[in-house]
Length: 462
Ligand code: NAD
Figure (cartoon, rainbow, N blue to C red):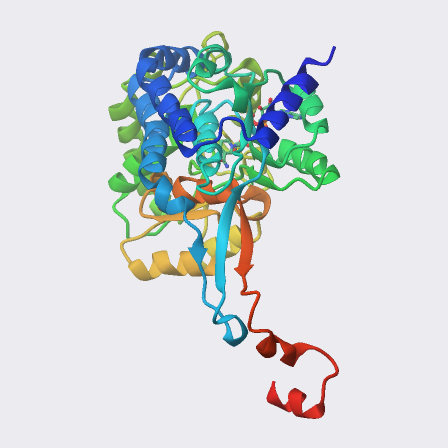
């Protein structure tokens, strides 16, 4: 008995047989995803509230609507994305046809984390299914989805409801945690798309290397947020707090720490306090707009981080509710744990720097982050931070708004990951770009120039 092996064999056979591969069939899978989101919206909101105490607003904008937007975009643009891409030719190929053909890889594995358990499962799935819709290819990607076992309520819907909307011959959901995912990774896939921690990213890449399977790794890290002295502190506080405390800080692109001068810190603290009170009231624990930490393990990790530096705002926690107050830490030392690991919770340390140069040097001393933010009234300052640093994405004068644009690629660099997706980038990620040149069987006289025996005269002609 090997149910996992049987499932993978069934999908691979479906891929090779090309049984259900007309473009219409594949478009129907995307439409099915759209219907799944529409018809189960309330169910999904409830599950997200149970797993993460997400408000309906947060669930809608960051999970349901964003996934729905990707479905709509893919359906609208598929024909254009699928087309062979004509490329420029050289003298020797002037009469030929040269193009890039996008082909599905075959059997694709998508592994998702718990923090945006719907978005980070469905958005890659849209890309994988869309990429199967090649105009010319008889077979499309078959997909194995491995949702996070930690966001249990969403996992249940993905396992039990989603398959009713996608054809079973090209799709399967496999459940489980590290052990089951480890077993899954022993099998050969043609592409692996992983979203999660850098630690598990290394496990995935090592397993993929055994089969030379290409990977996309969407990982995390510490996202710096530089705040210039000339900023309006209230505007910065509103924008930084919204993005830091959204989903209780459990966001891979959230600003992880603020870099600013001691003077700016003094102006920023009252502004942050006023923003936090306005957003979540005098008692944030009773606010319907503040999420909860996903589980006890993460809660204990975060509570330990509250001991770093000095608590300037918040700092309260309640284990029974997995609640951590929106918190700001000051006097934080670079070597303290809160500055060593990705925080992934509602805690915002402020680190003092004396100048823009020092901030840039601080950022460049560390691993390349997934996102980098710079606030300044001077576009020159924002551009300097952009030019003199590197990160997966960058946003000037705001939090993670850059990732709401499907026309921009989303992904990390260095320790924050490799590969990119969203919109057409997802389609391209899940497609092999095949280099094609179609030549004429005639014109042999022209071709004869390249055959031996060669003469010095021919060499001079090159
Ligand atoms: P994780 O790495 O612990 O788990 C991710 C997935 O890997 C889960 O499905 C899990 O079941 C599986 N897994 C866990 N341990 C495994 C093991 N030993 N072997 C094989 N598979 C294993 O990540 P998480 O805790 O679910 O999510 C948080 C992390 O994800 C953070 O680091 C965050 O920055 C990152 N993240 C990145 C992005 C992005 O788009 N770049 C988005 C969201 C989260």
